[in-house]
Length: 224
Image (tube, rainbow, N blue to C red; front, side, top):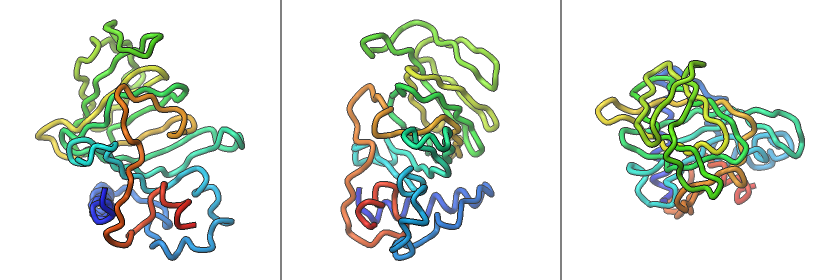
């Protein structure tokens, strides 16, 4: 992805969040120079990868396959400090987050507002292929049975609990607008806990055609 595209997506994301009155911490708006010399006082942010996370999953077509995320809080298994994570995300109409499961993480995904969020779910077989068996899933605490791969629509205010080894793909429903998505989970570890059904690039390679407006979580090591 080009840095100019990332900058544009972040600016659009800030406007969408503001329109839905979802407020971010003050450091979400820091320019890159504010991070210089801040490692010691911002260790939790940097080491646990809090902040902006824009991905096209390596497909170079963000509108088709991509996600805007901001990790608000996250813990660290090694330090056994916080054992929870919170994110806010934005998905556009038909903008896909590819099929994947987590080896360890259990997460609640909440439609916080905007359009409808569509899920497709499968159990993972022992060899990590897709099961055709129905999926029993908790929707707002109510067990619901759906067929494997059957579209499940979450309207604003609804949530789904995804346990480990449940494949899930999601996207905004066509004609309903962008979706504001919350995530609450145990510790998030994108380096070790994601299993995508097809290979993807979780963190994009950035072409630096202009200066960053705000740093991404995968920029911290480079800039600090």
